[in-house]
Length: 161
Image (cartoon, rainbow, N blue to C red):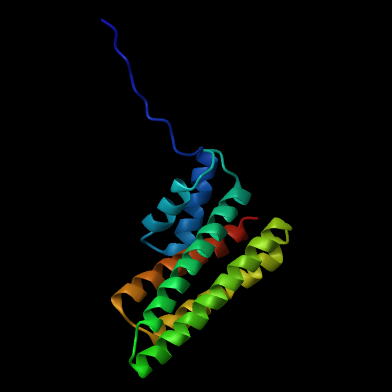
């Protein structure tokens, strides 16, 4: 009789895991499941270093900002209520700026200008707050929350560079 032991490999090395936990603990308060999941699901290799974690945070922030921008544009374009359209315009502007911020952050990341990258990432939170204040709906509240988490992940990942 042959017995096989199946050991599930670790998703990341302990050093990578420690960096992820530090970032998530600092950026996301008590509920850091979303942060942890985003990093773990996007690790290119188990021993991803802090540069790789920054790349994940920026890329996911940019993808999310772009997706939300398209979503808000569709909402605005399908709304006939002028007041609601005006409030949605605030979100359109916010997500347009967020897309610009994270596009620039990616450019700075690629040029290894981490100090300037961190500085512009820090400005992202205000854009999210502007949209959340202007247009409150359950869907946008969730989208804004995710965007805030992602932008905070980018800010705190940059602190480790």
